[in-house]
Image (cartoon, rainbow, N blue to C red; front, side):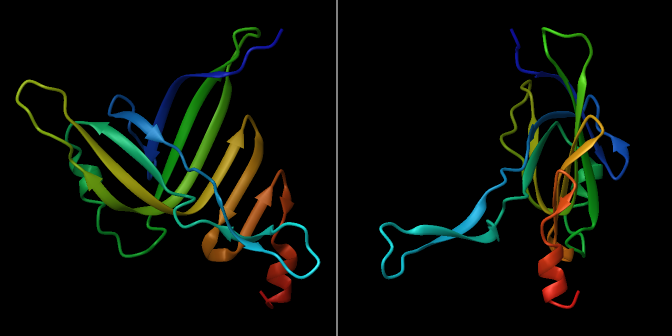
Length: 171
């Protein structure tokens, strides 16, 4: 019988600096396609036409315990891919020994900080929203997915799905 791998611990690195003990929660990217319904003559039903990724499909949130002046200082970066964030998760399957590493490497910039509420004697969390232009997901040593919005790259399990499109555009 197999059991699913469960996240046992994680760390986040912002431009290489470890956030261990500071980052308390991560909302990972929700990869969604932008589609439109098309139904032409003679079709029994509409077909969803894929137009790429939805707005915000690469976005993620990180929640830190308390005030982080280092993160706050990164709030108004000049370029869309100004900062690198790397999530490293250790997943364990209870039916086999060891851990599987999942890394999600992103490039983007913060677009929002939510300071939440402040109350004396209570825990304080601040949530940062990161708008990403690049996401790379690696499980173990295998790159499963790589999306580079600025360079029109979509790699899935080592297959460059946008190579023909870049060629057609003279890139």
